[in-house]
Image (cartoon, rainbow, N blue to C red; front, side, top):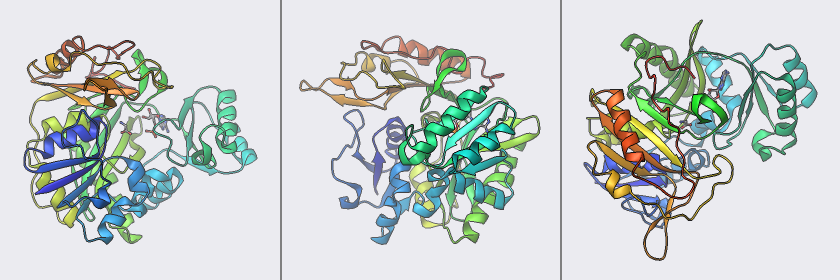
Length: 409
Ligand code: AMP
Ligand code: GLY
Protein backbone atom coordinates (compact mmCIF):
# COMPACT_ATOMS: atom_id res chain seq x y z
CA UNK A 1 0.00 0.00 0.00
CA UNK A 2 1.39 3.39 -1.01
CA UNK A 3 0.05 6.52 0.72
CA UNK A 4 0.61 10.09 -0.49
CA UNK A 5 0.33 12.77 2.22
CA UNK A 6 -0.13 16.40 1.11
CA UNK A 7 1.41 19.11 3.30
CA UNK A 8 4.70 20.05 4.91
CA UNK A 9 4.15 20.79 8.61
CA UNK A 10 4.20 19.12 12.00
CA UNK A 11 0.70 17.70 11.54
CA UNK A 12 1.80 15.97 8.35
CA UNK A 13 5.01 14.72 10.00
CA UNK A 14 2.90 13.09 12.74
CA UNK A 15 0.61 11.55 10.08
CA UNK A 16 3.57 10.26 8.05
CA UNK A 17 5.07 8.70 11.17
CA UNK A 18 1.84 6.90 12.05
CA UNK A 19 0.92 5.85 8.50
CA UNK A 20 4.46 4.45 7.99
CA UNK A 21 3.70 1.75 10.57
CA UNK A 22 1.69 -0.07 7.90
CA UNK A 23 2.35 1.54 4.50
CA UNK A 24 4.95 3.09 2.24
CA UNK A 25 4.43 6.85 2.63
CA UNK A 26 5.37 9.79 0.39
CA UNK A 27 4.83 13.42 1.27
CA UNK A 28 4.43 16.37 -1.08
CA UNK A 29 5.71 19.08 -0.96
CA UNK A 30 7.08 17.84 2.41
CA UNK A 31 10.18 19.23 4.04
CA UNK A 32 13.75 17.99 4.61
CA UNK A 33 12.77 17.12 8.19
CA UNK A 34 10.03 14.67 7.13
CA UNK A 35 10.86 11.26 5.62
CA UNK A 36 9.52 10.46 2.14
CA UNK A 37 9.64 14.00 0.70
CA UNK A 38 8.94 14.20 -3.04
CA UNK A 39 8.75 17.49 -4.96
CA UNK A 40 6.09 16.25 -7.44
CA UNK A 41 2.51 17.62 -7.09
CA UNK A 42 0.00 15.10 -5.65
CA UNK A 43 -1.91 14.94 -8.94
CA UNK A 44 1.20 13.50 -10.63
CA UNK A 45 1.93 10.91 -7.95
CA UNK A 46 0.59 7.34 -8.19
CA UNK A 47 -0.65 6.17 -4.80
CA UNK A 48 -3.34 3.89 -3.34
CA UNK A 49 -4.53 6.54 -0.86
CA UNK A 50 -4.16 10.34 -0.70
CA UNK A 51 -4.36 12.12 2.66
CA UNK A 52 -4.67 15.89 2.41
CA UNK A 53 -3.35 17.72 5.49
CA UNK A 54 -4.00 21.49 5.24
CA UNK A 55 -7.27 23.34 4.65
CA UNK A 56 -6.15 25.44 1.67
CA UNK A 57 -5.85 22.59 -0.90
CA UNK A 58 -9.12 21.10 0.41
CA UNK A 59 -10.99 24.40 -0.02
CA UNK A 60 -9.33 24.63 -3.44
CA UNK A 61 -10.80 21.28 -4.54
CA UNK A 62 -7.72 19.04 -4.61
CA UNK A 63 -9.77 16.11 -3.25
CA UNK A 64 -12.30 16.55 -6.09
CA UNK A 65 -9.59 16.64 -8.74
CA UNK A 66 -7.99 13.45 -7.40
CA UNK A 67 -11.38 11.70 -7.09
CA UNK A 68 -12.19 12.68 -10.67
CA UNK A 69 -9.16 10.58 -11.66
CA UNK A 70 -10.56 7.63 -9.73
CA UNK A 71 -8.24 8.00 -6.73
CA UNK A 72 -9.05 7.05 -3.14
CA UNK A 73 -8.87 10.27 -1.11
CA UNK A 74 -9.15 11.09 2.58
CA UNK A 75 -10.31 14.71 2.78
CA UNK A 76 -13.58 16.46 1.89
CA UNK A 77 -14.30 17.95 -1.53
CA UNK A 78 -14.55 21.72 -2.00
CA UNK A 79 -18.27 21.54 -1.14
CA UNK A 80 -17.69 20.12 2.36
CA UNK A 81 -14.49 22.12 2.91
CA UNK A 82 -16.61 25.28 2.84
CA UNK A 83 -17.30 24.51 6.51
CA UNK A 84 -13.85 25.97 7.11
CA UNK A 85 -13.57 28.14 3.99
CA UNK A 86 -16.64 30.23 4.87
CA UNK A 87 -17.59 30.82 8.50
CA UNK A 88 -20.90 32.35 7.39
CA UNK A 89 -21.80 29.16 5.49
CA UNK A 90 -20.65 27.01 8.41
CA UNK A 91 -23.03 28.93 10.70
CA UNK A 92 -25.88 28.44 8.23
CA UNK A 93 -25.27 24.68 8.10
CA UNK A 94 -24.96 24.17 11.85
CA UNK A 95 -28.05 26.24 12.55
CA UNK A 96 -30.00 24.15 10.04
CA UNK A 97 -28.62 21.06 11.79
CA UNK A 98 -29.70 22.33 15.23
CA UNK A 99 -26.11 22.33 16.55
CA UNK A 100 -25.59 24.63 19.59
CA UNK A 101 -23.31 27.55 18.70
CA UNK A 102 -22.77 31.25 19.51
CA UNK A 103 -25.45 33.71 18.30
CA UNK A 104 -24.11 35.67 15.37
CA UNK A 105 -24.67 38.03 12.47
CA UNK A 106 -23.01 38.03 9.05
CA UNK A 107 -22.18 41.38 7.42
CA UNK A 108 -20.75 42.88 4.26
CA UNK A 109 -21.95 46.41 4.99
CA UNK A 110 -20.03 48.51 7.54
CA UNK A 111 -23.02 50.41 8.92
CA UNK A 112 -25.06 47.26 9.45
CA UNK A 113 -22.10 45.65 11.24
CA UNK A 114 -21.55 48.68 13.50
CA UNK A 115 -25.24 48.81 14.35
CA UNK A 116 -25.17 45.11 15.34
CA UNK A 117 -22.07 45.69 17.49
CA UNK A 118 -23.76 48.58 19.29
CA UNK A 119 -26.46 46.21 20.51
CA UNK A 120 -24.02 43.64 21.93
CA UNK A 121 -22.37 43.18 25.30
CA UNK A 122 -18.63 42.42 25.51
CA UNK A 123 -16.61 40.38 24.77
CA UNK A 124 -17.01 41.08 21.07
CA UNK A 125 -15.91 38.37 18.64
CA UNK A 126 -15.09 39.36 15.06
CA UNK A 127 -14.16 36.76 12.43
CA UNK A 128 -13.22 36.88 8.77
CA UNK A 129 -15.60 34.80 6.69
CA UNK A 130 -12.71 33.34 4.67
CA UNK A 131 -9.44 31.58 5.50
CA UNK A 132 -6.86 33.67 7.38
CA UNK A 133 -4.28 31.10 8.60
CA UNK A 134 -5.87 30.95 12.06
CA UNK A 135 -5.36 34.69 12.58
CA UNK A 136 -8.72 36.10 11.45
CA UNK A 137 -10.43 35.95 14.86
CA UNK A 138 -10.48 38.89 17.26
CA UNK A 139 -11.90 38.56 20.79
CA UNK A 140 -11.97 41.89 22.62
CA UNK A 141 -13.75 43.71 25.44
CA UNK A 142 -13.16 47.05 23.71
CA UNK A 143 -15.99 48.32 21.52
CA UNK A 144 -13.56 50.74 19.85
CA UNK A 145 -11.18 47.92 18.95
CA UNK A 146 -14.11 45.83 17.67
CA UNK A 147 -15.40 48.73 15.54
CA UNK A 148 -11.93 49.39 14.13
CA UNK A 149 -11.43 45.71 13.33
CA UNK A 150 -14.75 45.49 11.49
CA UNK A 151 -13.68 48.48 9.38
CA UNK A 152 -10.24 47.00 8.66
CA UNK A 153 -11.69 43.59 7.80
CA UNK A 154 -14.51 44.83 5.53
CA UNK A 155 -12.27 47.26 3.63
CA UNK A 156 -9.92 44.38 2.76
CA UNK A 157 -7.00 46.09 4.54
CA UNK A 158 -6.55 43.48 7.25
CA UNK A 159 -7.09 40.16 5.44
CA UNK A 160 -7.76 40.94 1.78
CA UNK A 161 -10.83 39.26 0.32
CA UNK A 162 -11.08 36.82 3.28
CA UNK A 163 -12.33 39.70 5.43
CA UNK A 164 -14.76 41.41 3.04
CA UNK A 165 -17.50 39.49 4.79
CA UNK A 166 -17.40 39.24 8.62
CA UNK A 167 -19.13 37.12 11.21
CA UNK A 168 -19.77 38.90 14.52
CA UNK A 169 -20.49 36.55 17.39
CA UNK A 170 -21.66 36.51 20.94
CA UNK A 171 -18.60 36.03 23.20
CA UNK A 172 -18.67 32.74 25.11
CA UNK A 173 -16.57 31.69 28.08
CA UNK A 174 -15.47 28.31 29.39
CA UNK A 175 -12.82 25.65 28.83
CA UNK A 176 -12.20 24.65 25.22
CA UNK A 177 -11.63 21.28 23.66
CA UNK A 178 -10.90 19.92 20.22
CA UNK A 179 -12.61 16.73 19.09
CA UNK A 180 -11.67 15.29 15.71
CA UNK A 181 -14.04 12.88 13.99
CA UNK A 182 -12.92 10.66 11.12
CA UNK A 183 -15.96 10.60 8.79
CA UNK A 184 -17.01 8.30 5.94
CA UNK A 185 -19.88 10.42 4.59
CA UNK A 186 -22.47 8.86 6.90
CA UNK A 187 -20.90 8.43 10.30
CA UNK A 188 -18.00 9.82 12.28
CA UNK A 189 -15.60 8.00 14.60
CA UNK A 190 -14.29 10.26 17.36
CA UNK A 191 -10.57 10.42 18.06
CA UNK A 192 -9.20 11.13 21.55
CA UNK A 193 -9.95 14.71 22.67
CA UNK A 194 -7.18 17.30 22.88
CA UNK A 195 -6.72 20.86 24.04
CA UNK A 196 -4.52 23.39 22.29
CA UNK A 197 -2.98 26.70 23.34
CA UNK A 198 -3.69 29.38 20.77
CA UNK A 199 -2.19 32.52 22.29
CA UNK A 200 1.52 33.23 21.82
CA UNK A 201 2.19 34.17 25.44
CA UNK A 202 2.03 32.39 28.77
CA UNK A 203 -1.25 32.69 30.71
CA UNK A 204 -2.96 32.99 27.32
CA UNK A 205 -1.71 36.50 26.66
CA UNK A 206 -0.84 38.11 23.34
CA UNK A 207 -2.15 37.48 19.84
CA UNK A 208 -3.61 34.23 18.50
CA UNK A 209 -1.24 31.85 16.70
CA UNK A 210 -1.72 28.62 14.78
CA UNK A 211 -1.19 26.92 18.19
CA UNK A 212 1.76 26.90 20.64
CA UNK A 213 1.21 23.47 22.14
CA UNK A 214 -1.38 20.81 22.93
CA UNK A 215 -2.09 17.79 25.08
CA UNK A 216 -4.31 14.71 25.15
CA UNK A 217 -6.33 13.33 26.89
CA UNK A 218 -8.27 16.23 28.45
CA UNK A 219 -9.14 15.38 32.08
CA UNK A 220 -12.56 17.07 32.21
CA UNK A 221 -13.84 15.23 29.12
CA UNK A 222 -15.97 12.28 30.18
CA UNK A 223 -17.42 9.53 27.96
CA UNK A 224 -20.84 11.21 28.36
CA UNK A 225 -19.43 14.48 27.02
CA UNK A 226 -17.94 12.65 24.03
CA UNK A 227 -21.30 10.97 23.38
CA UNK A 228 -22.84 14.43 23.36
CA UNK A 229 -20.24 15.62 20.84
CA UNK A 230 -21.15 12.72 18.58
CA UNK A 231 -24.92 12.91 18.88
CA UNK A 232 -25.49 16.67 19.09
CA UNK A 233 -22.68 17.95 16.87
CA UNK A 234 -21.01 15.46 14.49
CA UNK A 235 -24.02 13.29 13.50
CA UNK A 236 -26.51 16.14 12.88
CA UNK A 237 -23.86 18.03 10.89
CA UNK A 238 -23.10 15.02 8.68
CA UNK A 239 -26.86 14.50 8.20
CA UNK A 240 -27.33 18.15 7.19
CA UNK A 241 -24.39 17.91 4.77
CA UNK A 242 -25.90 14.75 3.25
CA UNK A 243 -29.25 16.53 2.93
CA UNK A 244 -27.40 19.14 0.86
CA UNK A 245 -25.86 16.40 -1.30
CA UNK A 246 -22.41 16.57 0.32
CA UNK A 247 -20.60 13.26 0.88
CA UNK A 248 -18.14 14.26 3.60
CA UNK A 249 -15.15 11.90 3.80
CA UNK A 250 -12.39 13.32 5.95
CA UNK A 251 -11.83 14.85 9.37
CA UNK A 252 -14.58 16.96 10.87
CA UNK A 253 -12.81 18.84 13.66
CA UNK A 254 -15.10 20.40 16.25
CA UNK A 255 -13.65 23.28 18.26
CA UNK A 256 -15.93 23.34 21.32
CA UNK A 257 -16.44 25.38 24.46
CA UNK A 258 -18.01 24.06 27.66
CA UNK A 259 -20.08 27.11 28.66
CA UNK A 260 -22.39 27.56 31.64
CA UNK A 261 -25.27 26.76 29.29
CA UNK A 262 -23.64 23.59 27.96
CA UNK A 263 -21.33 22.52 25.16
CA UNK A 264 -21.25 24.90 22.18
CA UNK A 265 -19.51 24.84 18.82
CA UNK A 266 -16.86 27.54 18.27
CA UNK A 267 -15.91 26.38 14.80
CA UNK A 268 -15.51 23.46 12.46
CA UNK A 269 -12.28 22.69 10.65
CA UNK A 270 -12.13 20.22 7.78
CA UNK A 271 -8.78 18.56 8.58
CA UNK A 272 -6.70 17.24 11.44
CA UNK A 273 -5.94 19.96 14.01
CA UNK A 274 -2.43 21.29 14.14
CA UNK A 275 -0.97 20.75 16.81
CA UNK A 276 -3.79 18.46 18.09
CA UNK A 277 -2.86 15.77 15.54
CA UNK A 278 0.65 15.64 17.01
CA UNK A 279 -0.72 14.56 20.43
CA UNK A 280 -3.52 12.31 19.18
CA UNK A 281 -1.52 10.19 16.68
CA UNK A 282 1.07 8.91 19.21
CA UNK A 283 -1.85 7.64 21.37
CA UNK A 284 -3.65 5.85 18.51
CA UNK A 285 -3.29 2.09 18.82
CA UNK A 286 -5.38 1.14 15.76
CA UNK A 287 -4.06 1.00 12.21
CA UNK A 288 -4.41 4.51 10.76
CA UNK A 289 -4.01 3.35 7.16
CA UNK A 290 -6.93 0.94 7.55
CA UNK A 291 -9.09 3.61 9.21
CA UNK A 292 -8.44 6.22 6.53
CA UNK A 293 -8.90 3.71 3.68
CA UNK A 294 -12.28 2.72 5.15
CA UNK A 295 -13.32 6.37 5.62
CA UNK A 296 -12.21 7.29 2.10
CA UNK A 297 -14.15 4.26 0.75
CA UNK A 298 -17.33 5.38 2.54
CA UNK A 299 -17.62 2.69 5.21
CA UNK A 300 -15.72 2.72 8.50
CA UNK A 301 -15.95 -0.75 10.06
CA UNK A 302 -12.85 -1.15 12.20
CA UNK A 303 -12.91 -0.07 15.85
CA UNK A 304 -10.56 2.70 16.96
CA UNK A 305 -8.63 2.53 20.21
CA UNK A 306 -6.22 4.77 22.10
CA UNK A 307 -3.57 4.02 24.69
CA UNK A 308 -4.01 5.29 28.25
CA UNK A 309 -0.76 7.24 27.87
CA UNK A 310 -0.82 11.02 27.85
CA UNK A 311 0.88 13.08 25.17
CA UNK A 312 2.10 16.68 25.23
CA UNK A 313 3.57 18.77 22.42
CA UNK A 314 5.45 22.05 22.85
CA UNK A 315 5.99 24.28 19.85
CA UNK A 316 9.47 25.75 19.40
CA UNK A 317 8.86 29.00 17.53
CA UNK A 318 11.12 31.45 15.70
CA UNK A 319 11.69 34.99 16.92
CA UNK A 320 9.04 37.33 15.52
CA UNK A 321 6.20 34.75 15.35
CA UNK A 322 3.21 35.21 14.93
CA UNK A 323 4.44 38.25 12.99
CA UNK A 324 7.18 37.77 10.38
CA UNK A 325 9.58 35.15 11.78
CA UNK A 326 13.36 35.27 11.57
CA UNK A 327 14.46 32.31 9.38
CA UNK A 328 17.57 30.47 8.16
CA UNK A 329 19.10 29.69 11.56
CA UNK A 330 20.76 26.31 12.08
CA UNK A 331 18.77 24.09 14.48
CA UNK A 332 20.84 22.17 17.06
CA UNK A 333 19.97 19.27 19.32
CA UNK A 334 17.08 17.35 17.68
CA UNK A 335 18.95 14.01 17.63
CA UNK A 336 19.93 14.30 21.28
CA UNK A 337 16.41 15.27 22.32
CA UNK A 338 14.99 12.20 20.56
CA UNK A 339 17.18 9.88 22.65
CA UNK A 340 14.98 10.72 25.65
CA UNK A 341 12.32 8.14 26.48
CA UNK A 342 8.97 8.82 24.80
CA UNK A 343 10.21 11.87 22.86
CA UNK A 344 9.63 12.58 19.17
CA UNK A 345 10.34 15.86 17.38
CA UNK A 346 8.00 16.70 14.50
CA UNK A 347 9.31 19.21 11.97
CA UNK A 348 6.80 21.98 11.32
CA UNK A 349 8.81 24.68 9.55
CA UNK A 350 12.29 23.52 8.55
CA UNK A 351 14.58 23.65 5.55
CA UNK A 352 18.20 22.59 5.06
CA UNK A 353 21.32 24.54 4.14
CA UNK A 354 24.10 23.71 1.63
CA UNK A 355 25.84 21.57 4.21
CA UNK A 356 22.66 19.55 4.86
CA UNK A 357 22.07 21.08 8.29
CA UNK A 358 18.47 21.63 9.36
CA UNK A 359 17.48 25.32 9.41
CA UNK A 360 14.46 27.31 10.54
CA UNK A 361 11.88 28.06 7.81
CA UNK A 362 8.63 29.26 9.34
CA UNK A 363 7.10 30.62 12.54
CA UNK A 364 6.31 27.34 14.21
CA UNK A 365 9.53 25.37 13.60
CA UNK A 366 9.41 22.20 15.71
CA UNK A 367 6.79 20.29 17.73
CA UNK A 368 8.61 18.64 20.59
CA UNK A 369 6.30 15.81 21.56
CA UNK A 370 6.45 13.36 24.45
CA UNK A 371 4.31 10.53 25.77
CA UNK A 372 4.20 9.44 29.41
CA UNK A 373 1.94 7.57 31.78
CA UNK A 374 0.49 10.89 33.05
CA UNK A 375 0.18 14.38 31.62
CA UNK A 376 2.78 15.58 34.13
CA UNK A 377 5.27 12.93 33.07
CA UNK A 378 4.73 13.65 29.37
CA UNK A 379 5.02 17.37 30.05
CA UNK A 380 8.29 16.98 32.01
CA UNK A 381 9.79 14.88 29.21
CA UNK A 382 8.73 17.36 26.53
CA UNK A 383 10.33 20.31 28.35
CA UNK A 384 13.48 18.28 29.10
CA UNK A 385 13.75 17.68 25.35
CA UNK A 386 13.04 21.34 24.54
CA UNK A 387 16.00 22.31 26.76
CA UNK A 388 18.33 20.32 24.47
CA UNK A 389 17.23 22.15 21.31
CA UNK A 390 18.38 25.60 20.29
CA UNK A 391 18.83 28.21 17.61
CA UNK A 392 19.15 32.00 17.93
CA UNK A 393 15.81 33.53 18.91
CA UNK A 394 13.96 30.24 19.58
CA UNK A 395 11.12 30.55 22.10
CA UNK A 396 8.45 28.34 23.67
CA UNK A 397 5.52 28.80 26.01
CA UNK A 398 6.53 27.37 29.39
CA UNK A 399 2.98 26.60 30.53
CA UNK A 400 1.75 24.05 27.98
CA UNK A 401 -0.39 21.44 29.79
CA UNK A 402 0.38 23.01 33.16
CA UNK A 403 -2.73 22.82 35.39
CA UNK A 404 -4.28 20.53 32.79
CA UNK A 405 -7.08 19.52 35.12
CA UNK A 406 -8.38 23.05 35.60
CA UNK A 407 -7.22 24.76 32.44
CA UNK A 408 -9.73 27.13 30.91
CA UNK A 409 -8.67 29.30 27.99
P1 AMP B 1 -11.34 29.98 15.88
O1 AMP B 1 -10.23 30.28 14.90
O2 AMP B 1 -12.72 30.22 15.38
O3 AMP B 1 -11.13 28.67 16.60
O4 AMP B 1 -11.13 31.04 17.07
C1 AMP B 1 -9.88 31.14 17.71
C2 AMP B 1 -10.11 31.28 19.19
O5 AMP B 1 -10.89 32.45 19.45
C3 AMP B 1 -10.91 30.14 19.81
O6 AMP B 1 -10.11 29.04 20.14
C4 AMP B 1 -11.49 30.80 21.02
O7 AMP B 1 -10.52 30.86 22.06
C5 AMP B 1 -11.76 32.20 20.54
N1 AMP B 1 -13.16 32.34 20.11
C6 AMP B 1 -13.68 32.12 18.89
N2 AMP B 1 -15.01 32.32 18.88
C7 AMP B 1 -15.35 32.67 20.14
C8 AMP B 1 -16.57 33.03 20.79
N3 AMP B 1 -17.74 33.09 20.11
N4 AMP B 1 -16.53 33.35 22.10
C9 AMP B 1 -15.36 33.32 22.78
N5 AMP B 1 -14.17 33.00 22.24
C10 AMP B 1 -14.16 32.68 20.93
N1 GLY C 1 -5.20 23.92 16.49
C1 GLY C 1 -6.05 24.76 15.78
C2 GLY C 1 -6.22 24.41 14.38
O1 GLY C 1 -5.71 23.42 13.88
O2 GLY C 1 -6.91 25.15 13.70
